[in-house]
Amino acid sequence: MNTTITDTLEKLQAQGLETLKQAQAAQIAAVNSVRDLVNNATSKIPASASLGNIPTVVTQINELNSAYAVKLIEQQNEYVNHLVSLFKSVALKPEAPAETKTEA
Image (tube, rainbow, N blue to C red):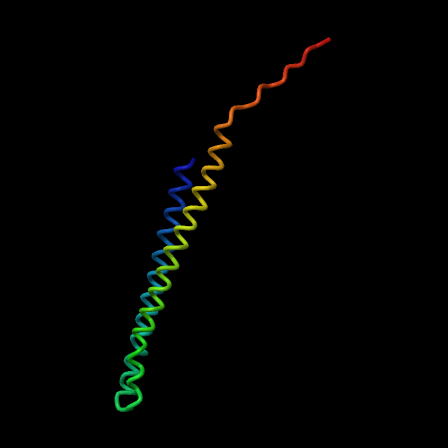
């Protein structure tokens, strides 16, 4: 039974990652189109040089998000490991002897 649950969960996770990948590809294509439009529209405007900071900001945000994701996964792993140890401790406790009734 555990194998079926883990197999199903693994398939759902793979599908979720693929869906996310497809959405990200669509967003990249859209941003690329916008970038081309902005680049063409602003190429003759002197103040457009400040747009060059956008990649730096995006990179910084990406680094922050990556660090957050790592911390989130580490915290989640600690939480699950703690739960597992609690369940193991319950499973390892010996059962109390059954009471026997004596008839009078």
